[in-house]
Length: 101
Image (cartoon, helix red, strand yellow):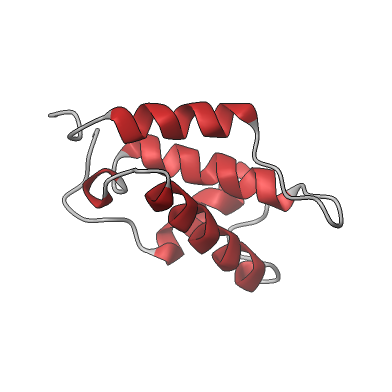
């Protein structure tokens, strides 16, 4: 499935991010921190020009997981997204519509 009819919820994205970070899905120890990072990454993507209609795209979900992983691995006083995160956002922002199934 290339695009969904509606955006994934933050709870669904939380599960995807936990899987990407090798955090047990049933653990809730980091949920608050991860939800903050998910919302930050989504806001960053929208600010970078990713259309709301593309935020449900499978590619967007992968980019969100990469962005959350970047933020998860920060050192104190450092804020830095990886070059691949920026490259993928640029590509997605340049997309006009989700790919048809």
